[in-house]
Image 1 (cartoon, rainbow, N blue to C red):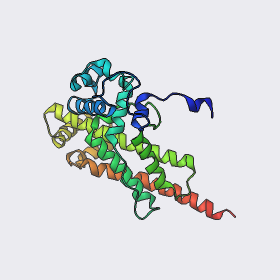
Image 2 (image 1 turned 90 degrees about the horizontal axis):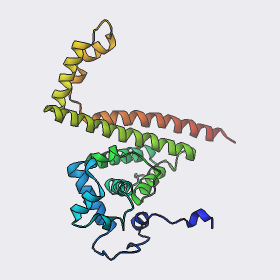
Image 3 (image 1 turned 60 degrees about the vertical axis):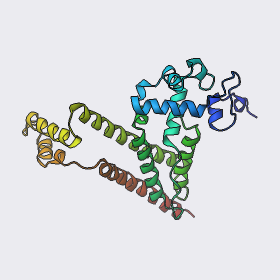
Image 4 (image 1 turned 120 degrees about the vertical axis):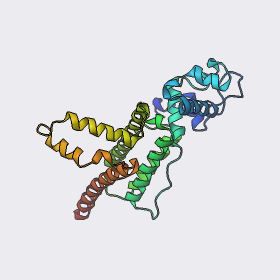
Length: 256
């Protein structure tokens, strides 16, 4: 066995995978990683990600801060566990098997729904590759969708990262727009209409003719559902991926 294979894993990661159920020391049987993560999710859901700290979560559990460190080594580790719990399990594989497009579409929409339930997740900086149970399950599910295609393994990874990035960014933009509208005291549609009027006053049509035509068309005055915007973009991504898969399939068919 390689020496690196014997490196000790973080305790919370071992517990997340069911490799151990108790901390190596300390008597506190009333606590667990699951209870700590659940309490942290409650804080993030009601007060926002910025409110999450080891002391705040400990207070929610009615225990001392140091008790948490027997289970979770740091706030950063706790947030990673929170993200994994927030995503939950991935959507079921597509039926019939081999329909990569419907599979990846369901995968993206499932991720979007998870981000809608817990919008703070999109604010968390990606600090590593998937290691926690749900993260790995989502990765496996996306790879399974692409298993029957002629894409190279590296290309499958790039496709997954592309869709993941698009979905996270769309969720982040939606949350930002909703927050800005809420801060203004307006509904999102009214907020966009107000923006359009201000932009029309500032953007000289002689200097910005394309933008002036865009505003004049009433684009900002239509309250398009965020899901419609997301579906449009996802469809274009999948169209591009379909073209790549077609190219790889043609190349494979042409080989002797």
